[in-house]
Image (cartoon, rainbow, N blue to C red):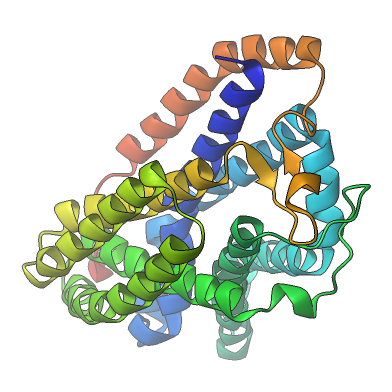
Length: 331
C-alpha cells in the first residue's frame, strides 16, 4: 500500500476518533441548559467531561497537523477556502475552553450563567459547522486550475451542507445524552435516558435523509455498505436508549459516528477535495501529498508515539470511569 493511501486512512481515523470523543463533549454542552435545572446539576453535567474534554480536542489538532504535513495542498486549499467557518469553530472552541476553566472562579449567578451560555454556543456552533464543512468536501467545491477555492462563504451554505450540519448536530446531541445517562446516577441519569430516547427518534429521520441524498449523489459500493452499517447502528441505539442499556446505546451511537466518517472517506478516495468546476481539476491523494521522504519519516514517528498516546488516554478514561451523582457535587 502506498504511503499516500496510508496517511489518507490515518487522517480518516483521526477524524473518526475526534468526532467519537468530542461528539459527546459537544452533546453535553448543548444539553446543559436542558438537563441542568440548577447550578448543581449543571456542575454535575460539566464534571462528567471535565477530566477528558481537553484530551479529546487533541485529536483535531493532530488531524490538522497530519493533514498539513502529509497533504499540504489539501491543507492550504481547505483552510483558505473554508477560512470563515473554520475560524468560527476555532473561536467557539476557545471560548468553550475558557468557560470550563473560569466558570467556577466566582460565586456569582450571573457569572456562571454567562459561562454556561458560552459552553452551549461553544458546543453548538462546532457541532453544526463540522457537518457543513465535511458535507461540502464530499459534495465538491469550486476550485480553479491552481486548486484555489473560488467560491464564497454562501456557497458553503447549500442545502446539502446544511443537512449535513443538522445531521452532525443531531448525532452529537444524542451521543451526549447517552453519555450523560452512562456517566451519572439518580435524577440526571433518568432525565438523560428519557431525553436520549426522544432524541433518537429525531436523529434517525435526519440522518436517513442525509444518507439517501448522499447515496444518490456520491456513494459507491463500499460507501453504501458503511453508510447502511451506520444507519443500522443508529437504529439499534433507539431501543437500547428506551431500555436504559446505556453502555450498549453509547457503543451504538459511537459506532454510528465512526462508520459515517469511514463512509465519507471511502467515498472520497482517491480525492481529498473534488472540484465542481472541473472533475479532473480536483485535489487527490497524489497531487496534494508531500514527498515520499516526508511521509516515511511521519510514518515512523506515528508508529512510535501513537500507541503511547492511546494508552495514556485509555488510562484516563479508566481512572474516571465512575458514575457521578448529585451528592458528589458540594452545595
